[in-house]
Image (cartoon, rainbow, N blue to C red; front, side, top):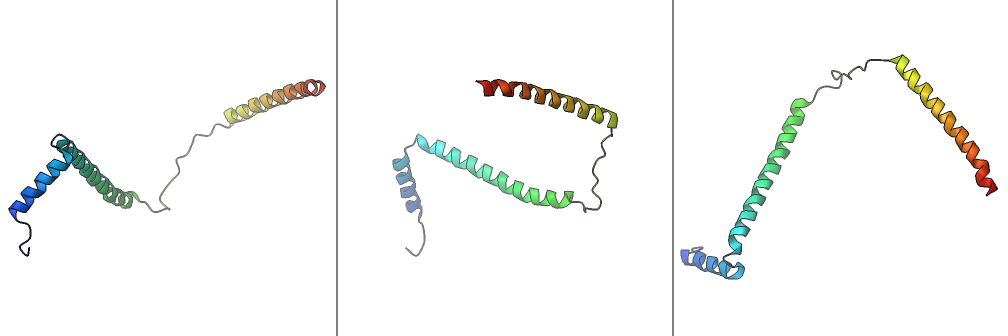
Amino acid sequence: MLNGLQPWHLIILVLVVVLLFGAKRLPDAARSIGKSMKIFKAETKDLTGDKAAAHEDAEPAETKQIPAKPAAPASTDQQVADLQRQLDELKKQQAADQPQKNAS
């Protein structure tokens, strides 16, 4: 007992595992364990990589700039006018439909 696992202990352990799970299911189980370990390693690597990338990409707040959009006030004013006209038409339609609903 003090010597730890003997080779015959390992043989008995392997035989018990084969008897419990069956020889057909063992390769599938080993394959799924291998895939799980691969995913686990990739995720832990991504976690450490994300932290390093976040530190490398970080810029001081003073140096960040917002990209300027080309201003087009004429087209914006035209869009507002079109939307206002549509809103007025909808209000007129709603006002025309309201007396009909009350009459019913």
